[in-house]
Image 1 (cartoon, rainbow, N blue to C red):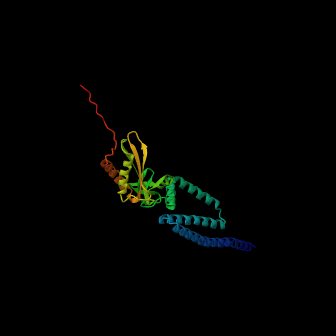
Image 2: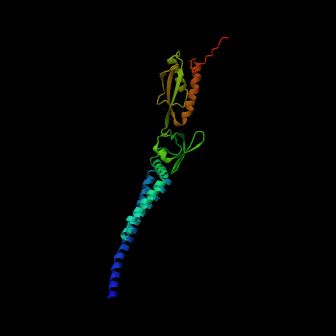
Length: 270
């Protein structure tokens, strides 16, 4: 009788756990196939959207591991193992890691946002976080700039992505703004003609949009002429510096005074 009971019980257990094991195997096979399809689809989407290769690898590995953890929890649940404790342990571990790496995770998230939305790219000249320079490298946690005087600036991506970014390389053209001040005795029309002659003589200044020369202010000691011209972005600094120099020479040649502070020495009589 005991043998029959044990046999019956053994058959029942084998049937019950055998079905669970078979179900777990089926879940593993189908789940692994689905994970491969999802990862492959994610890779295709990232490639089409031009995601950085290093970012692609990191995100695809992250997605793969998260899906595999969910798959393992599903298999354990199929086998009758209580998964609540496992989920609690994973949540606690994730919270502890997140708190310990709060700054690094913020920089990582910033790097992801920069690589996805691309507010700038390598080679662009930008201004951000009080620094100005050409983008040398965009990494997961930091971005490196090279300043005009050849210094390397490393900016954390967290603060970079949360702050204002001025990209001077996005557009093909830039506007050069220069203000010239002349004395009050100077003729306004003649002054405009002299400045315009300097502008028209510079082949790097674009005809469209047309240059603009206007009286912008009647200052304490000068009439200020606000001059705006458009150039290709690569000609910006050359045009700015040459305009200042050439306009000064042209105004001097035309006899137009550029006022400056004078110091008057008063001698005391003995």
